[in-house]
Length: 423
Image (cartoon, rainbow, N blue to C red; front, side, top):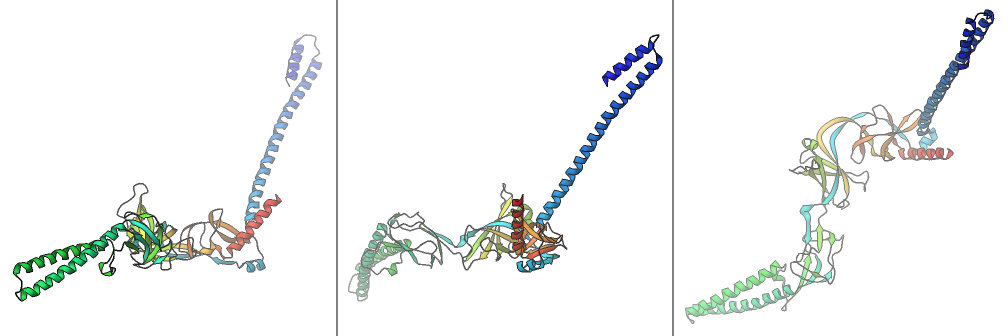
């Protein structure tokens, strides 16, 4: 195009010269003009063609995306025949809103009832000669858990036997002096001296007996004429041995906790109430507790304690639920979920626990639509072990699978794996 322009300029110069053939110059000018016009049209055509090509590419990309989305939807939609549905036991219901009790769901930890737990330590130092209590044993109040041979106890017992004998002699002398005084056989001073010795012996004997009691030995139970140095370590009440540190042959001290016994017929469920929930619950409110170890089971209890102080870091208040545990299935340190009733009611969507499955870590249900079953992630706020309250992900009027959900999940995963291998 640049060369054509130069040629045009040259022709104009020629036309200015005298003697030039005007007709030839005009023909040449026309040829050059047509050449320039053709070049312009060629470039414009190239631009239009490129634009059209880009538009076709974009249309194809959009179509591919729509096709991919459609393929993903079809991949997640599982279609079953009537016979397959019946064999899998699939049951579908139309979900509707229901009136439900408002609750506050909390994560919690099971603890032993701190009012019924005892750390058992010996009252005397000594060597452990026998261990009869073991971890997990159910023991009765007064049952011997271990025997300790103690020098201190032997000395106390020996002293008790000695002063007991002195007390008996002094008493016999006083009784004799009292009879003789009545008969006016002995003088008053002898009677007073015998009474004084008896009072002194009685006080010493009482002190020795009290020392045995402080060491955990009942003096009335001591029938041996020789000193006894064996100290029985006993359980204070009916409970379960949840900790044991007693080792045969080791030296036990008075500050050593050799056993821990807990009454687990009731347990504490400890949780934290957040500041915004404090006004919704009160002591005495009914509560339900569930644990992963027993799916589908609900343990009923009562809110028995709300702390008077707020943790400034967590902005939470410690709370406690007391639950009966007669069969001992609830173990200390288990994790639990507690639902505390607030006393209010609200509208909500309830589903059976069996309808909610975990898929990729997300609570999911199956919806019947598009001629098949599709997974739908949901958000649930609480569960009483049998029903789940759905907070988001579903709406009234949708058809939800409440029976056979596990079979649908297995078939869907199998079909997805098969499709992956085909690629």
